Structure formats: structure tokens, C-alpha cells
Length: 412
Ligand code: NIG
Ligand code: FE
Image (cartoon, rainbow, N blue to C red; front, side, top):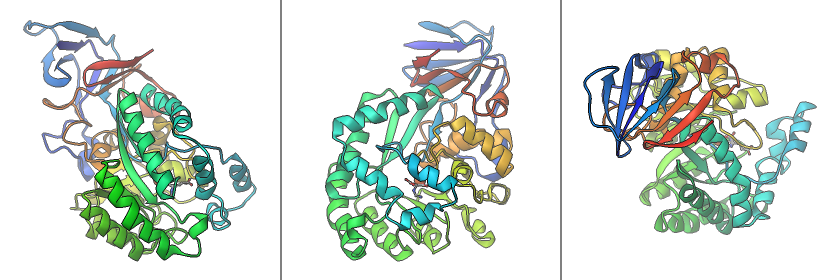
């Protein structure tokens, strides 16, 4: 089938000239086309043609009615697979109790672990599905979801199976990440060695053999895993063929960044407290810096040094980090506005950060994240004639059509 998407006010291609990423100063160039249409054949971008140009055979025309077409957004860091609520802890935080303090007292991530362990496979599918619908309604066509709230062999596998089932049930691509090293489950609080052994000797082999996850992530932090523990987990995960990601330099700088870079991690995420000199390490590397301003907003602390990273030449992506404890935010549009307002990113840079660079953070940049001939026809269409509105209209979902591999999967 050949489709023509025509009459867009603007087509934002985020063209990379075939490089499929936008480091540093490239992030501001988002490739704005006017008076153009896109030809899609069998789900793949075939051509960009001038409006009113030469006729070609088309099976179906889709009139975009002066709206703005962009690459489908890529949500590259989420903890969408959770159950229960942490509104009580949110109340505690509002009255001055810190996020790390709640975690140290056995709450935080472990509160959600209890709720996930008490939920069946089917219950989890039901709880999570509306969250995916909401992402799709925002124009998100590729979504990463981590495990990390099971923290036992049985419950981590259950969560990954849920994430894989959600991928089969939904029209977008859902990428699964294993986060067994999210924190120590309460029952292993006094035996960290044993829990690391379970991850390395039991969970990772089963996950790899059954292809339940593509990435292995960990949380390198004082309240979670040390750099040395992450190093061992990463070595084992890499041996099993999993690609790596790391939550690091969120509250403390305890050596996670170096471990991740030594292992050529696909991304390092958070970086709220990355040191000035360490920002240099993010230049001329294939590792993407995934920044999560929703966490800084929700926990009311440092924003990551986006300006410094971009000005030096790092490849920066943005994500919601949607989770029940540190960023109960699933609105990517709000994240783009926070990045602009609080981290000094330009509107164009926020767009590169949620498209091609986010795709690179989950190793999908060869197939999606920008509109280039030969890539997937993954689009989001916004109800505006000017892409600036997407960031300027804070918290408002302007997406009105989501297209995955050439097919309309959502419209309003
Ligand atoms: O990315 N940093 C660790 N993990 C999550 C928070 C998870 C939670 O609090 O439930 C994060 O911020
Ligand atoms: Fe996270």
C-alpha cells in the first residue's frame, strides 16, 4: 500500500543526513519542510515530494489539514510497569521527609515492590494498559518499560512477561529493560551478596534464554547498588548479550558513570549531580545522556546540566522517567517544557531529545526517531501550524494523530 500524507503546515523531519543521532550543536537543526508531502510504502518512508509536484500512483491520501507532522516521539526511560500508589509517601515528602530517607526506612521502591508482588499477571496487564493508551495519545510510537518492582526471580520474570505481552497487545513498539538491580528488596537488606548472586546466576540467564529483555539497567546509588556491584552485573549481562543502561549520578557521585562508560552502555540516565569535569566524558562517546527533568521537578532538587552537556557536544535525550516515587509524570510534553524552562534547552533541542536521540538511547535510531527515506513511517501530528506550540503550550497534549509504520493507530 502506498499512502500520501499531504497538506501539513510543517513537516519536522529531524533529518540527520543518515547519521541517525544529533550530538551537541546538531540538536538545534530539526529540518523544517513546508509545502511538502510524505510518500509511505508498506510502512516505510519512501519519499518527500513538493506539493503540486508530479503525479504518482497512490492508494490513499491522508489530509493533514494544516497541522504539524513530526517523527513519532520515543519515550526511552519509564517505569510504567508498577502497581499500587505512593500517595502517602508523596504526602510525607510534602511535609519535608526526603525521598532517600523514605527509601532508607524500607519504603520507596520497596512499597511498590509489595504492590507488584500482590498483583497477578492479568491484573498488571489491566493496570498498565491505560498508561500505554495515554502515551500513544501523545504521539509516542516507541516506548521503553523497565521491570524493577518485582525484585525476586518470580516477580521480575512476571513483570518482564507482562511488558512483553503489552508489546504484543499494542500497536506501538514496547522495548523491555531488566532492572532487577533497582534496589535491594527488604528481605535481602542484610545480605546484598546473596541478592547479587540471584541476579547474576538466576535472573540474567533465564531472561537471556527466554529473550525477555533487550537491556539490563541498574541503579548506582548509596541507597541501591555500588559501582563495583554494577560492574559485576554488567559483565554478566553483557556476556548474555544484553545491552546496558545505568541510573547514575542522581543524588551521589559514587563511580557509576565510569563503570557504564567502560562497559559502553547505550545510555546513562539522570546525571543531576554529574561533576563539571565528568560532563567531558559524555562527548565523543556513543553513550547517550538521558536527562529526566520531571524528577528534579517532582523531588524539588538539581536539574541536570543540559546546557553544559549540549554545548560540549554530548548527545542528550529527554524522558519522563514515569514512576510512582520520583516522577509521577507521564506527560512528555510537560517534560519538554521543563527542559526548556529549567534547563535552558531550546525548543528545537527538546524536539531532537525526544525523537532521534531518545531512539538512540534504546538502540532504535536506525529505524525510527527521524523522518528519512527508508526509515519507519512513525509520525505524530500536532494540532498547530507552528511546532513551537508543543513546548510553549505547557502540559497540553496537542497530538491529534499517531501513526505507526504508516497506519493511523490513534486520532481525535
Ligand atoms: O528513575 N532512581 C531510581 N529509580 C526511579 C525511581 C523509582 C521509584 O521511586 O519508584 C528513578 O527515579
Ligand atoms: Fe528511572
